[in-house]
Image (tube, rainbow, N blue to C red):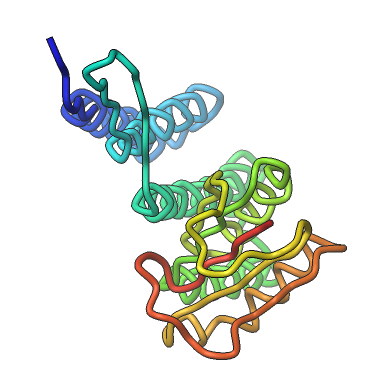
Length: 230
């Protein structure tokens, strides 16, 4: 018997979406009703986020050819979907950080204690920057030897609010090929609006790597900005 294609969609999507959502909403309900978050709430949010991550597997497709050879493949769709998911997780982390500050204030001796004006200003500034950057997706594709740098770069981009992901590939599909330790940055007309900010993050996150930025925007299939680490 020959199996042409087995997409792992129904199970991962339904289980991840339902259980992950229930766990996260449960922790929020407990906090709102009892003003208690604690270790239990942290665990619920963590497991809920991991379960929601199962939706990423919907981008994979496993196949078996007539000779019995099993192959797995994915495209840039994986990077794009992972970027959206990562951005939601990072936004959740931002909210958890704010809740932690509020909980500390509630547990203080003075029940009416509030966060300081400095902290409030810093929080609002970061929230505005995060919201602005969340309109843009920055996809990182890297060769195996650049795994550490690629993952670290995506984490920094996520922390800045960008929808981002780090995806391993041999980069043979790239129109241009570059030498090791060179980064190629391509972008759409919309991505050009955030190009300078992304360049600064790239230079700070991967020191010692030569950065090559395309002089003109491109019609990318996925993402507003793509960073290819060779």
